[in-house]
Amino acid sequence: MRRLFGKKSGRAEDYTAVLDLEAGQTELAPGMCNLYCPQAAVKTHVRDLLDVLSEQNKISSEQAQQIRSEQPKGSAEPDKQLQKLGLTPQDILQAHASLYGFQFRHIKAQDVDRQAFDKLELSYIRTNLVLPIEIRDGVLIVGTNDPADVFRIDDVKRRTNMHAEVVVCDSEDILAV
Image 1 (cartoon, helix red, strand yellow):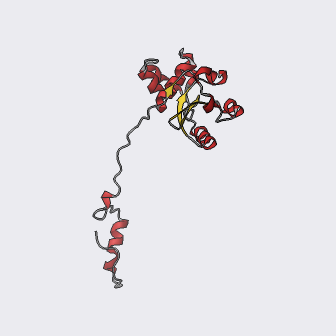
Image 2 (cartoon, one colour):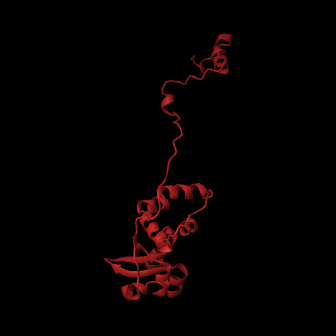
Image 3 (cartoon, rainbow, N blue to C red):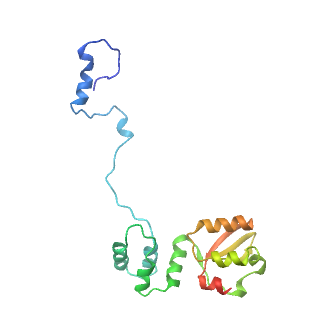
């Protein structure tokens, strides 16, 4: 490949490199091939709720593949399809907890520390389904039915001025307390 940028001498031979490029020359300058080298398209898979349920032997891998193929693009979670297979909402919630790396707990009124409970208003607890359970080593343990809602947990941290640790609870347990 000839040098494209140099002194203009007005001679016709200085423009032959430009003509070479127009003729379909695609050779890259040395080192340029290190900047961009397209790879073959590799299909990736992100671990999801169906994988967790399959690992827990709640559904088979064939059922998981069938649900994925039937699931419309952009839909959030296949909860209704899973309930048709006989899974309970509690099974699905436990899988959500496992997917996000949280503990699943059943909460009763006697499990809740009054000092922690008073950190949030009762109306906030009811409308957001977030339950302060206890304070352990200066950290507020909070039960929620939606472990993916990080904004709700951040709001609890802001309202209480405390760090929060999440456990997943059934919404019925939260409302019963």
